[in-house]
Length: 443
Ligand code: SAH
Image 1: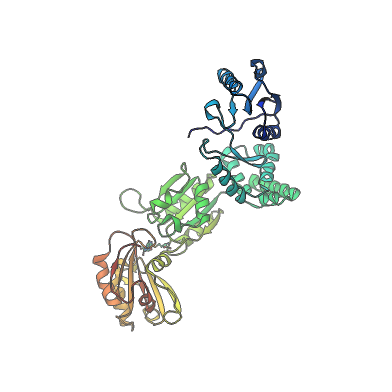
Image 2: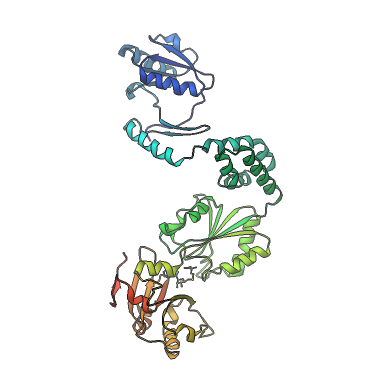
């Protein structure tokens, strides 16, 4: 960074303008808008700098410009000579003014035109009412400090309010309503500091398959409780200083028991911190999200659930397998392939019916057993199937074949990533791999 950006308070301060011309007039307008007292001169003399906070020059003879620059630099007064970086100690940025919100854009003098283009883009995304939101927060500053003396609590409250209804009302210019909404939110925050847990779906692995809401919440969380399935690429997007708790593997290789996770969420929320419980895929699909919200509800802690892209959807998308198809599959079933006491707790008769797609989660080790059960119930061993490892991540692998082939080969084929079976006529409809039995590289 060649120049350090900062915002200077020029209210009632003297600023020297030396020379003339349109460029200097433009600076004069901006400085006047910032409340500066302008001292104009066409010739330089050192006493002009008495009590001056800042100096700008343009359109004066070369010797004058040099003298001004040298004198200012000797006294430590910031000086800008328009289009003369060698004579300047500061440059002025392109400015977006949503008073009191100000955005300054600089290119270290390399390409002022580029700065203007950036400004146009930023102008387009910033609402004209942005300044009114800042003004609203400013009006409540004193009351907010009194009501919520704790800095973290204040920050949490403001995050909610600035992204919520009060800010929206202020932005629309409905000041009285905005103030009422702000005051009401403050009253609520004062009386009910119960904590809040967000159960957030982290998707299948690739960071760009995360939802925008998940991304925002991860940026706001004080603590993130995640499991093994959440990829490093996704965790990297969390707030830098957020605490991360990995409940996928504690000491050794054993995951933290579910009751302990439930208790941990309650405990963290009660400490007043913003908790994100980050789960691979979708929190409500074989993620035990249901048990966690029950525990939170029992403890009187508020929760919100943010959906994520579940493994079956990611695997199907990346393999080009349509989960439903007008001719081949009129329904999709998500099945957990875990066995209880050596027996699969699935309804084989229902799953053996044709015209559907079946996604088997957590099934890598039970596939031969699953195959035997399904075929005994009438399923066709030549039904197209796909076994997909690390779907929705850059390292996806895919094994396509008949149900019989995939069920018997998957065990030896699969690596150490999570893997899922898709079964049904729709698996034969992937134009990416028409009917073929193949192992493909990612993307
Ligand atoms: N809540 C998760 C599922 C958790 S159960 C979701 O919605 O995706 C864990 C099982 O999900 C794994 O055993 C595996 O079968 C499947 N799984 C999770 N991520 C996967 C991935 N990226 N590719 C393939 N299967 C995956």
